[in-house]
Image (cartoon, rainbow, N blue to C red; front, top):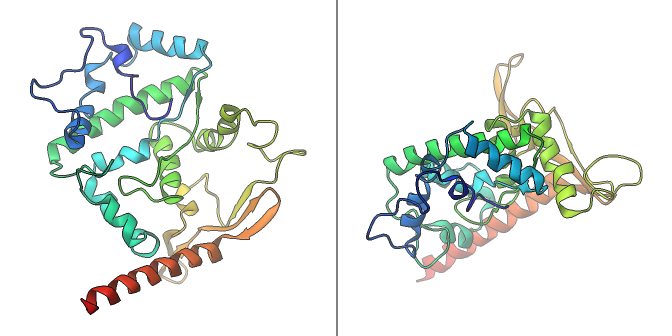
Length: 277
């Protein structure tokens, strides 16, 4: 299961349909996702018989959850996502326009997003994360995915944020890495080829200065701001140095610079066109 659609509904105990308002319009995406923020609290409580029986049934089916928490994060703090520090350097202007509210575009639905909606979604996340963590603790497979390309989430950066959110859900950092590697390989039926560093498998590795188990922020392309106590200055550290894909070594920082240059060129081109009008 990617996302979570249908999961809380399967645990309704006092209704068969979500508590929609009488004039509800499913085609209005802000309304749809706003109402979705109240869904988990209408479902069974954590630890209840229904909650546990749902986990047991999914386990019996060898079911995999790929929650993609990160793609919904703007629902709990839209200003944070809109102003993520990597947008200026790494998000093309055309993609940034796609992210902005527009009823014609899927996922661009924060037309008049309110504090109340964000509060509801924070509670929604807490309940949803509890289920995913309980499922993992019961032996269920959880894999990492980001669904980036929508809702202010940029490819690569959104994936690292998903690792952070799995940790927020209660996963130990090593369990997060397992979700991002072995579990994903098992889900694809490729565990004999990828998903672990071992003889006979493809050499798919990222090399980073520092220990991401202690801080996943080291994996962001922008790195991480850290105080150098000896020098008394703030330094930007981390960022993947090299990516090894099937044995081929790529300079990750050089690739990031290529993207930065493409974005800068696109911005300059648009600025020139605007000035000429």
